[in-house]
Length: 330
Image 1: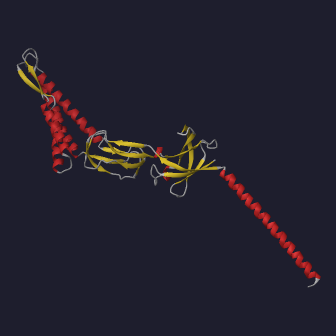
Image 2: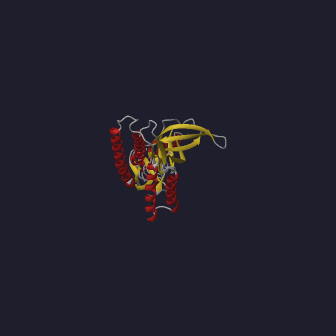
Image 3: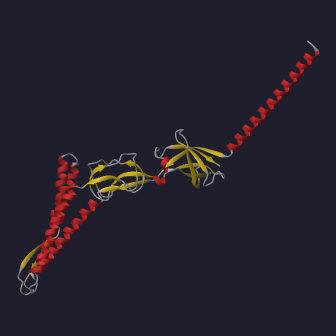
């Protein structure tokens, strides 16, 4: 091997050595940079693994008593405020109202006829008489109609024996109440026609009162969603009698759904910070810290309760109480 070849090989070895050293230095620099970036990033976000989706429940109550005829939504259905979610069966109510309308029309016609002929002086149209004023005929009619309805439902097996017995008892109580006031009309300046007018007036008022009750029931026979949200059904089934004030179902209100997380007090956590929220390792949902409350836990530590709000349309596939992981960007 010539001297030139030897020198060339030595030069090549030196160059290769320096190249390797240079590459090693570059690798060390890159790894150091990545490590510092990792440390920096770790100091700029906080992971909380036990966050929870929470929300307030709104009870939907019936304003009237009656037979729950139809429920138009299913559990988990998303509804808007004002949606019809259930209906009270008003078949019997409409029938009874039509009957009362005819009676009220007749009563007013009778009153008008009495009024038109009540022109003679009292001393001419006076004599002794007994006039019966029916003071609770409308109540008896309503109780009777309810008893007949419950008897039909009981025969079909739609209600219990106790419910039917209660309707019978209510009807008997209505019959037991003194149903008339006997007004003695004598010939001492009291006109019989005046008394009949008073009787007709009472009858009209009774029928109008009964009509108001039926109109109220008919008006509120549709049960409306008071808020937008997700339906949670109760144990009340269709074709069962419910009372005014009974809870038909619950709605998890959209406006009050948020993620709640807790962490030992950290001064870097602020209202308005960006948050990533993960449910069951799914794609994250962007959120924002809306409120922070500091409390003391059982270990006497200051703990921050963090309220995180998210877009409502992103939460429709998740249930209240579901756990989530959140990453707070500090």
